[in-house]
Length: 359
Image (cartoon, rainbow, N blue to C red; front, side, top):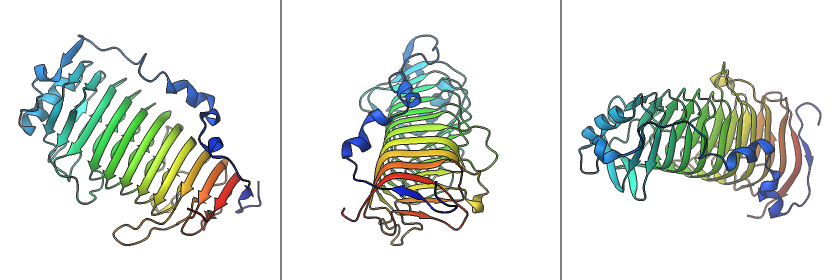
């Protein structure tokens, strides 16, 4: 550990294989990778087609909204959506599905198409062991501007939710947001063209993320946040790719006990990797945060509305001192520095940071 406020950096040339191999993944992370689709929950009544529940590509968006909420709320159904565009009226108060604990599965060519591009897509409030397979969402017209707190998919206070194989195209805010949820799992998801974050966890515990791709997000690609007072903590993410981020690449703000492995961040407006206590939001203080085995390329080089971001470094940390570790990371051609810290008293351990000005 360096002196207070100074990073410890021991640099050497590290092979690409060392950055990307799954051998560097912690045992806790490996345990969930092959087990996501089995052993979660129990549905009732067998599988049923969405068509038989009155949810159809030929319906009006309003009819689909009403019938979708009616079919899923307070249920453990296993609902299969055949191919087609299912228009959903999400205007005004968004569709809220409460206490869903079943399965939603999309067949090839099926997707939800939300009709309002200024409001939330779908809200899942409560529920245990819900599973979503091959979920695809978009908007009739992609949102033209950010509207705060209007996520495409919002999960509130859920437990053991699984999203496996998802494509989210567009959102007025975050693509997928979990708030105060226990053990959410997202695996093999692609999120693009959002006006805020790609994948966002706020005050969640036991998070698991595997194989995430985010493209052209208006804010962070992947974010773990605690806005202060959270009672849930902990997350693990592996095989993460963030490209063309409108803010940071992968951010941990206020949260603790987070491990992020095997990642590529390529093109950000702000920092590539970011860990901080943010005084302006009265967040918690991150501790026990470990980034390892990854690459950060062109941090701080993306412009948003023609203007640059702040902290245009590959690695940036601020207001943290307790077990903040960056190891086996390649930093290439950041706009400013490979490693930087902010004005708050800060300390981190950095090991095997390979620096290059070649893109």
